[in-house]
Image (cartoon, rainbow, N blue to C red; front, side, top):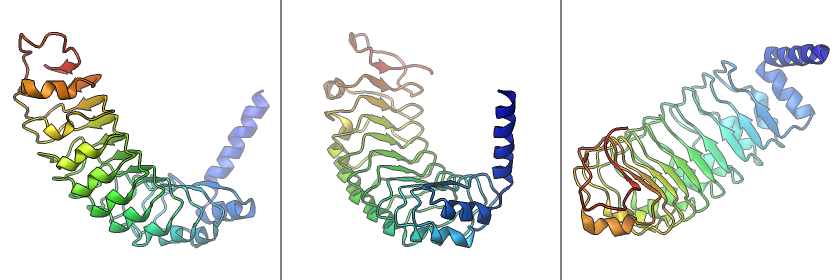
Length: 268
């Protein structure tokens, strides 16, 4: 048992010492479908990456990539791409050519904007772009009809495009820690949405667009500036399991709010 453990440690050590080009060559020779090149201190990608025609999963997170990794555009079978925690200021302009991509993670890169070509990733199920300094969302996002999870928290987004309402498969949406004050009325078209996080924005009221949403179960609006919740809106939220309004100026539960335990007030 001890010998097996030592052998495993040695193999891991050898893999950890491999440079990027060696890893790429091994991946090509073995026709591997997954390659993890995270935590390698990469500033640019090894040129051989463009030859990984069988690759389906590529992990490049926690490196020092500055230039857009155009080499990945040759990976026509790629399904999952993780670029979290690099130094990218732009993504490849033709990223929409990755027609089989279902997962894209670009969290914590100083991007400021996402390219309109993101809307061409029609098979995308998950898009994560938290902590990217985004100030807006591309109009083309409405084309992502298969998108199920979207993480755009910790940015400086001030408004959502009306096309946002076209995300008919969206189930999980995190918009916490942005600069939103209201939502477009088209948000009410997100009839697959189950979870919505609007914490730490600039809302002074709960958007009426969020009432009567067929599948919404959890709505979190903590740490905003909400002072009241009008009684006529409450029936529209009756399907919710939780409406979290903690850490807002609305702190005290009105006496007539009996049986509305799903509405959380007060401090966290």
